Image (cartoon, rainbow, N blue to C red; front, top):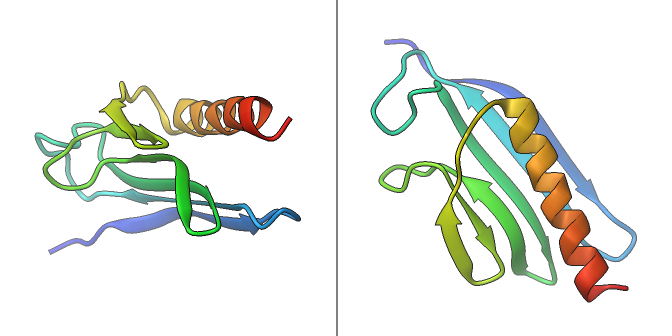
Length: 98
């Protein structure tokens, strides 16, 4: 049986202690929850608090977290996902760190 293949693995720690980490796996086959064949986990947080996150854990499909709020996310592409993630980080920082 084929396994998921890790295709993106990035982690950075900013000078303020913020962690940005994201991973993307290519699945061997599409399924109902992941018709695009990607499993992913995107995280931005500080001091142990998740501030922005995107993932598609089993049973939840594609969704994002903005602080304590969770909402569905419409997946288009990995490139778009990365752009949306960084847009949300920038928005969070402009509203909270400025």
